[in-house]
Every structure is written in structure tokens, then in C-alpha cells.
Image 1 (cartoon, rainbow, N blue to C red):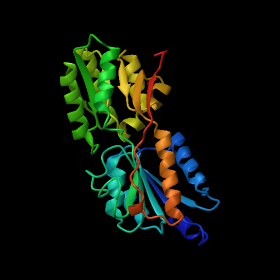
Image 2 (image 1 turned 180 degrees about the vertical axis):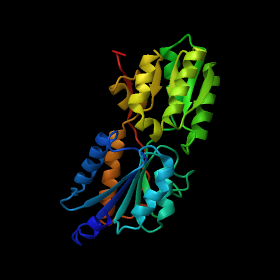
Image 3 (image 1 turned 30 degrees about the horizontal axis):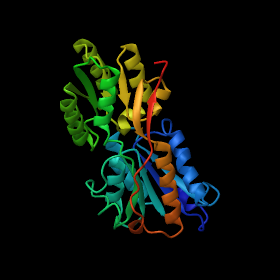
Image 4 (image 1 turned 90 degrees about the vertical axis):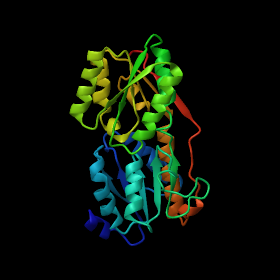
Length: 290
């Protein structure tokens, strides 16, 4: 791949694209990113090249992938699929412009100095993916109104996990329900979590947002259906493959905005001058068949 980059015409800028997810489960989001680029006049293989690196939900790979990209002659580095890729990109380079899509607070993650004035070499879209766990638990409680216990499945390797847990526990107190916290960072642990839900007869499940669960979307939906467990998720991708309920931002539009910001930087814009955007559109999806 570095040889391919070196072979590009000198006039063609190169974008690095780092994702904590996989190309299979983000095809529609990648298409939205390219739509945003196109709005700024950039088309892959026509007047811009893109170098992709995918972690497939395995957080331990992200730092090495970010380092690979930072060693290439990039005009911009895009990070998507969680906080970890953005932090890894920021650690890998202080000079290449970084455009992130991040679910947790970028100020707390020390990616930017502030939303209106990011400073430094990074800016992007704060997609609020991890800030809505309490709202999702409330919706699940409405769907299963007699439940006195709700399971909450968390990925402990995800940097935002502590804040997700705190939000879920606060929501449980407000709803007067017990939150049974389960943790999974491997496929086997997902299986074990559902076994625990069945054994404890927990009536419903909330799955926390995060790239690991995004890459295991089909597995989670299948297990919830097999065990007849009503479940809520953070994006409409889950109801589209058979999940019951989701509440979250319009991810495709957020990725389009990442593409727009990337194009603006390719045209000479500076990350320090581009405020961090936040979505204004939220989506509630219910799969009626499920």
C-alpha cells in the first residue's frame, strides 16, 4: 500500500481513513463520507486517493494502524468508529490534519481544546453515540413496562465504557429499575452474556454503543431473537437486520459531514478554524415485525 501511495500523481492528495469498525458493517457510512467529499469536489481515484485501515472492532490493533497511516504522505487523516481511533491518530501525529467522528466528548478525550475553537490539528463531528444510554434504557423500560430489572451489555475495552456505565446506572435509579451490568469484549463473552440473561430471566437488554458491538451486529440480533429478549441499540443498523428498537443520531449524515470537513481541509482549511459539529437529528426506529 505505501508503494501505491508513492505511485500516485503528485497533484493527487492522499487521505488516510482509520476505522475501529470493518468495511462490511460500514459500507453505507463510507458511502456517506464519500458523498460529503463529493460535495467539496473530491472523488476517490479521480482527484484524491484514500488509504484505508480497519481494526474490525479489535481495539488493540488501532495504535499500530494509526502509526502506519501517520508515516504516509497524507494530506488529511480521518478517524471513525469510536474514540480509540481518534486518540490513536492524535498520538501518532501532531502535524497531519485529523478529522474525527467520535461518540464521546472530544474535549474530555483531549482531542480538542474546545468545540468552537478546537486548536491544534484535529476537529470533526461529535456524534453523541455514547451520551444517550440513559434515554435508550428509558425507551426500553416503556417497551417492557413491568420489568424491574434491565440488562446492560457493555464493552469494557471501549474508552467511553465508564461514562456509559454511569449514565446507565443513573437512568436505572431514575426509572426505579435494577441495571444488571454484563461485559463482553469477545464473541465468547457475548454468548456468555446471553446465557446469563436467560439464567437470570432478565426481561430486556440494552446494548451499549461502541465499535465492537457494531461489528457483531448480526450476532447480537440473532441471539436476542433466539432467546426472545427485547433489546435496544444505538443505531438503526440493528433494527434493519431484525433488532427490536434503536435510538440515536443519523450516523450517515454525521459521516457525510466528516467528508465535507475533509474536503474543506483539502482545499486549505485548518482544523483549528473548524468548530466541532454536533448532530441535530435523532432517530427512533422500531422493527414492527420483531
